[in-house]
Length: 366
Ligand SMILES: [Zn+2]
Image 1 (cartoon, helix red, strand yellow):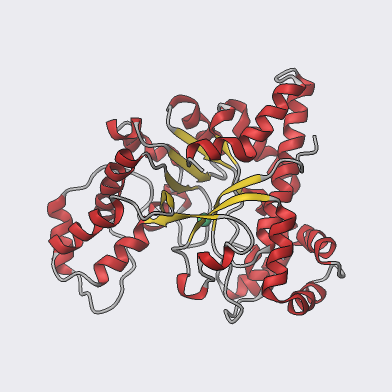
Image 2: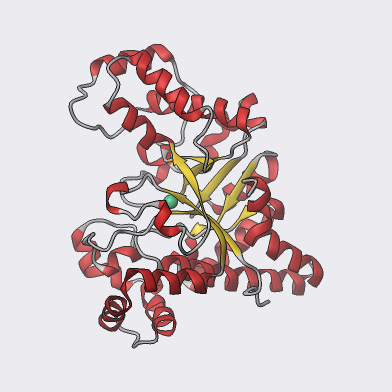
C-alpha cells in the first residue's frame, strides 16, 4: 500500500540544532554519546548505511557522508529543513523542546515549515523551577501554576522518568519527602533531577492538571540514549500508575517502546486510555527490525490506539527518514494483514489514516 497521499502528524519529535552547534553528522544516527562509539561505530549500523542512500536521493548527491555533509552546507539550514520537512509530508508536528534547549532552534523557527504544537517536558520544567525557588512552598506553588492551566500551545505533557529514575512505582510520592529533599539540596547550580520521589511528586501534579484540562501525558519507554537503564524502562512498570483513578481520565502515550513493543501493545489493549507509538524504532532499526516492531504492535493493540512519530532530533533529515519508513513499513504491514484476512482493503486504508494522522488529531484535539 502506498501511503504517501496521507499527510502525517508526527506526534513526538524534538527541535533541530542551531547551525553553530557542533555535532558530527553521524551522531544523529546513534543513541550512544560516547565519542569512541560515535567516531568508530555509529557508521556501522544498518540504519546509517541505508540512510546514506535515502538522503543521497533526497538531496541529489552521492551516497557518502562526505557528499551529504557538503550538500547540506551548500543548501544551508533553511533550505535543507524545507526540503526534508516538505518531503516528509507532515500536517503538524508535536515538539518536545526540553532537550538541549540552548543549542536548538526555537519552536517559532520550525513553524516556518510545518505547523507546530508543543510538548511540555515535566522534569525540565521542575529543574527550571528548582533552580529559582527559595522555599519549597514557592517551588510547589509555581509548579502547579505552570501546569494548571497549561501554557497555550501545549497539547500534552511529556515525562522522561524512564531516564531519571525508571518507570517503577511511579505513584509513591509524599510531599514530606519532597520538602525534606528540597531543603537538603544545594541550589547554586542547576541540578539534574533524578530523585524518584520528587519526580513522582511532579507527575502527580501533572496528572491532576492533565485530568482537569483533558491533556495526554507522553512517557518515554524502552530504548533511548545511554543514561537510561533499559531494565527500568519497560512500560509494564507503569501498572500502578495506570491503575490510579486519575488515569481513567488522562490518556497515557507510551513512546518508542522498543524492545518492549508487545508489552506496550498489551497495555494499549487492556487500559482504555493507553496509546502507543513506534517512533525512534522507525527509522532507527534495520528494515527487518522496523517490520517486526510495527507488526508486533498491531498484533494486539487496537488500531485507534497506535500513533505515528519519528522522535527526530538534531537534524531535519530524521523527520523525513521517519516519515518515509513509517509509511513504507505501515503500508507493508497492513498489506500483509489484508493478505492474511485480518483486514479488508477498505479497512486497511482507514487504519493507515488512523495511525498516520486521525488518532493523533483526536487525541491532541488538533
Ligand atoms: Zn523524544
